[in-house]
Image (cartoon, rainbow, N blue to C red):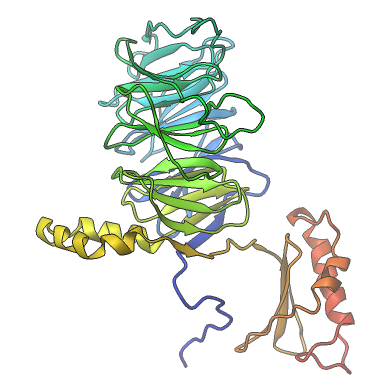
Length: 438
């Protein structure tokens, strides 16, 4: 007899592929994608490596101190982790430490990257210093002299950088302050490449505070800087231009990433949803719905998936728009041109998919006398299910909320199980004999 799956709420493909837990109580800081793996920077002083097909943990790089920032080479064969006191470089295949370097006392790293030949790492610190560290010469830490440190800008003191980001090849770094224009610098000689200041009146902040960037990243193909202002507006800027191009649609973005092919911008909204925009014209292509705030996100190396971090979980999305664009790239140039002519209009239409990222189950209880069982989660949602026939109970949700305390979490799962059994033994429903006890 073939297996039967019942209780499917959505018969169509909603783009929501998988969700897995990194560990209870952990704060997830960043997510990275390699060719066949993904990695997550956690608050547990480690970077965890996972298979991109099974999502099982394959390796853990434990730094033994809090990791501030981390980065992989473009080939994915090396990893650098920057802690409070030391910087370590790892071989990702074997997990072996290739080098350990000391941080200057009291200086914290805020951005790091490998050079194009992977022989050096570039480090930007909160004291506005920039240096290069040669991997095979532990004492060869080369300061890069640039005009950024402690330089007033139009009578305003710049202070500590708000955020910074290296380009994909490590040749440039973009730095943002609260009271100064965004600036791009060369990591080879420290020369200023360009500056960008937001036009007056563009800020949508009602408090009157001048808009400044909260997040910065790079388009790996066009070498544009893509970022988010503190009022949630998205912008892109080419370092040789004087002004940014800002998205006209008002959104409240909190996290941002660019696709590896440079054609898409993915933004995580403050309401938990994800929006996919065209890089060229900021046109909205797709929208995915979530239930909690996104803390970090990235696009897979093949451009088909989106990985985002929420609480202590990683969500994996595979929306149709990414799959269609990836398939177009595999076509011949003649087929590609004709295909674009026939499908450019549908791709510009917004597809809004109500894919809800459900909370994981934290307790389950089965009725020993029938084939019915119940399960619940931290959101105090109770579902009753009968084997081979789905049945959801909404009438007992109020009763369930009365039994489970407001502070219920996965740490007191025993209380959850007791609450489920108490509800189960005191309620009546169409699948449990009313005259029996267990």
